[in-house]
Length: 79
Image 1: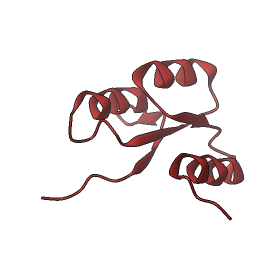
Image 2: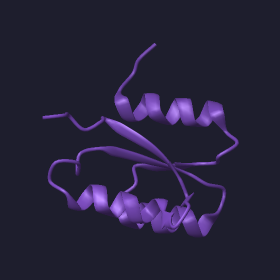
Image 3: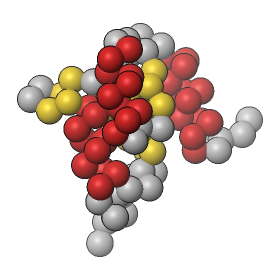
Image 4: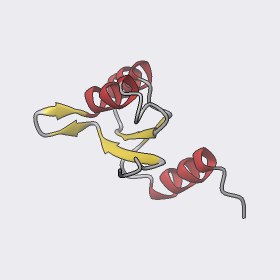
């Protein structure tokens, strides 16, 4: 079968689904519970909701460098 990704990056709002809801679903499934999830948002309420759902981190959507740094840290990338 297919292997789940090591990490996912999700927007706080995904149409009718919230990023935190998808993170909760990932963390509730034994096949995907190890997947690191990063939420893109600038809202503190989204951050709290995502972290409670099991997100590994939250990054402001406008912070590309912060996203790269966060993913590298989560994946153990060393320069």
